[in-house]
Image (cartoon, rainbow, N blue to C red; front, top):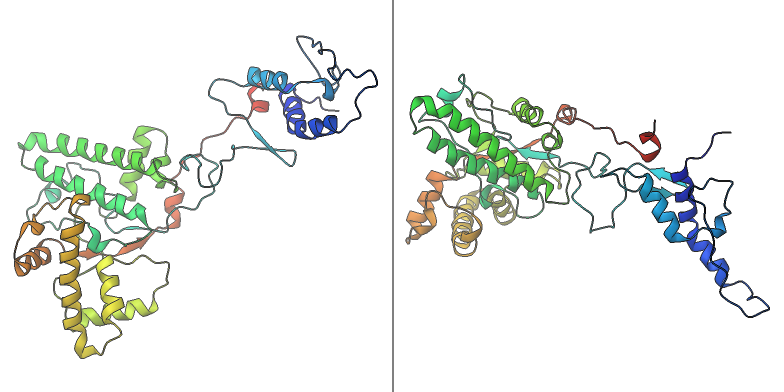
Length: 355
């Protein structure tokens, strides 16, 4: 018969402690009226056969358990008598979902340009080219509710593009070190934000070693050479074909698929109208969206082109069309092979630590 290790014996006793305390409280008091039993005497080392379970105090069990746990090791949890590999967290108040045993599903969608490619000698020319289409994300092309991970990706891309612009203005021999450093710092900040939320972080952030983590982002970059672009929509020119495309996609796409905020507003207000009335409706919705955005959300988003500073409505709308709305990207469903990039670390349980 296999001998039970001391720590699991202690855990089993601790799990049964509430039942023992209830049974003792319901027991008939002794005839001599003495309700206080004599203090139990414990040997320095106990085994399964040395001491009866009802003679072990809760404090003693906790002390013995802590003695067998190594530094940084967490107390395993028993559920129906079975040890669990990862301690459970209270619903709604748990720590960020970053452990290997986390079961919350990752987001299904990510931004078309995320993650950004790693700067190198081979792509630095394209990265710093004047005519390169630079992604810019704000409330107009991100979902209004849920999908907060998309906002974090958009913020990371916006900040990185600002730094790339600065690096590309340096001397030629300083551009690559600057761009590489900013790329790494950007992804480090992004992963820090990912771990601060209760959703499962982007899979590359869960890779432990620094260089392996950066290589994961590099491999997942959809445009590593900074050439070409993903599927996008021109909301600066709301023509009939574009509105037909928006309305047809809205009627066929699943409800759980994220939709850019401005596209959603146009869809809800204009797609139900006759085709001849959609263009004016869409222009009106876009103008109202820009006005509301500039008056209520200016502190939550950096306006690099200072479009909201334009006093005239027409000038403000033209600035948005030229700077932000001409290239509204779609969202890309995460591929299954991306999850294979995750590096799973082994969890060592107390029973395995001694082996």
